[in-house]
Length: 328
Image (cartoon, rainbow, N blue to C red; front, side, top):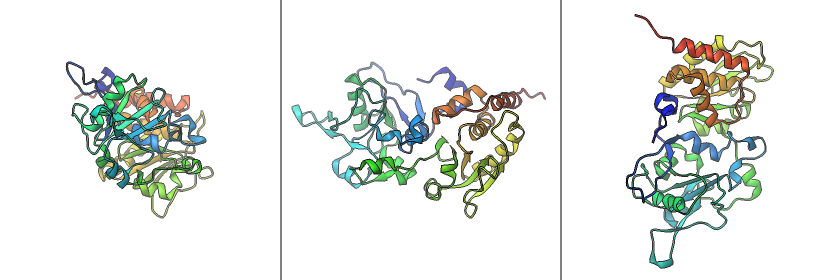
């Protein structure tokens, strides 16, 4: 079921890799529910969208995210998504269609529960992942249960640096998990801050070789110049700043690299005002959607965005220019 706003705004179209809410197997008819973009799942691992990002990744809190792997014990031990727990089949009542929830899982209060198997591509399929998801939903789980589209096979192929054989983590290891940028468009457009831009291993993991840097040289010197192509926009995060006059060259730069299938990180000092504004301007242009829809899309990926009022005004003006009817 797709909402009206999603039907109108291309910003919220389903993406090739996503999570879907399962429907109950007791329903008289089944239908796909709203799909949530890759950023929604991936950002849970390298949290840059949650309020806790300046202290420690919220993924260390199992009341925030619970990842359940429904594959076999051998497959799980061979490799799984970081922080995922193995959901083993129940051995009671000879019912191998039910699963035992791992010890310590806080299902009733878990905000985000994501289940996966090898390669489920639809919630309509009868697969281990959908069976567990429906089991959890039927048990009265407070929050939606999500199924990872494509399962472990697709996820590990697209995000190999997030697969592991590690099962136990010390508190220090959990707190030292790196912060990854917010993925706005899957495997293409990322929004972040100075920590992401100056982290060489992070850029290597995500295969990012292109940056849009918004800030002056004093606060943000060039990032990784030896391996990164960069567009620098010298603009202050201040009420008198005119970021709107730079939208054209920012969009042209990002589009050039999209056509070459290259990944782009847009960043400013904190990644909440100038960089967020630039990303919204790109979405308005690329998807022909409104400022409100672009804002909603970016905020769903990175909740702490706070563009200055002057930048919001410039985005509204940009929207009017982009969506202005053309006369022939």
